[in-house]
Image (cartoon, rainbow, N blue to C red; front, side, top):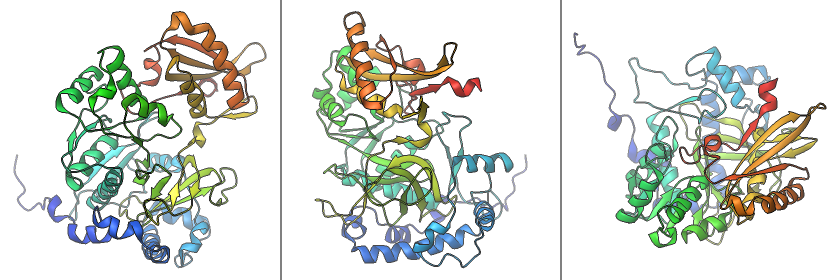
Amino acid sequence: MNIDETLDFPRYSKSLDFDALEKEYPPPPEFFQSVYRMPRPALRALQEKRFLKLIARGWEIPFFKKRWTAAGLQPGDIRSLDDITKIPPYTVHDTRESIEAFPPFGDFMGIEIGGKNAQPLVLHTSGGTTGMPRPMLYTPQDRETMAILGARRYAMQGMRPGDKVLAALSLGLSNGGFALRDTIWKYIGAIPVMTGGGNTTATRRQIEIMKNWGIDIICSFPAYLRHMAIVARDELNIDPRTLGVRALHSHIGIEDRAKMEALWNAPCYDMYGTNESGMMACECTHQNGMHIMEDAVILEVADPETGKILPEGEKGTIYITTLYRSGAPSIRFNVNDISALMPAGCACGSTLRRLDRIFGRNDNMVKLRGANVFPEAVGVAVAEDARSNGEFFCIVDRVGEDQRDEMTVMVELLDLATDAEAVKENLERRLKEVTGVRMTVQPVARGELDAYTGTSQTSKIKRLLDKRKSAV
């Protein structure tokens, strides 16, 4: 094989002006003396400047140019942030169609791969729970800004240099575990302990690592945090509260935070992020709404049916616009997560607006005999019952000669032999109160649902199987 000595191999260290990036998107501690407490008019002016630059970039990317032109827009029509509602939103279905039409990465990346001006790129994907994982490329600017935004989160939530952080997040194609590693060793000075999910490092071994290495902080999803605590307590006879874990960093949604914190005797902090956009909002230690990184993203909340932008306090689907991404920017991406905006202002002194918790996914909602049912709401009711370990799985199907829609909720019990009938009766009544529709509860033994949910194996937990869709 002959070596082509004329090739210009890109070097990561020379691909980005790091000093300039940190001035533009300050990491901690500079973040707390700048964006975190920036007066609202100054923050609005900063957003406006970056938004208009983003729109110019959007016109260079075929995906956006085609969609905007089809909607009747022309370059120059978007003159200010007030014009954002003129831009048509898009969904994951549109990006999937783009990938199908222009494989393998679609026409929404706007990135040259290889060639004379090659950049060192990183590829990660969506979870792939509803089909082939969607690939996403990250330029050095994207990747480092994401890491800075993540560092802001962990600093706000009490992570400090030298902390030993158990990263119980997927280490496969998805972004979470690797993004965490980039963040905490580059911009916090904490030590990432990359155990991954249970399919990478067995849960029992993760508990042993916590005990023997003195883990300070755990980063994982609620279902696996709960699973680890139960394995420690019931299989290893180790009270998780004695392990000295100082904090839990997670994506809580509508999980029962109080029970999670009681299991570990540690605060559990919430955040919001996506594969496409990284970490966009997070709680501070006051745990009163998630502060939005408004210098880097714009989050709107819209009515799922009409697309009308909703005022603060009203629940709707989230539209994401990334102000920092040079490759594959999101510009009014309807991510289908349900939340609500909260006013700016917090006891911590930040001027950033806040996002309420995530109440579920609009596309995860199922219609059951005329009622809208979210699996997340089912999970809240299950978690209320101390006889369950909190694990559940919903199956929707058409049954009987009349083909009526029915949902069966399988629930893991701590003691199936003793509690099954009472739990079935109590939970069926409670679910009717919570959702307005009658369901069937099927108690099962502990661990039996893992084949459905993947709780012990991955951070991307499944809670619903709608057999009506597969039957169409």
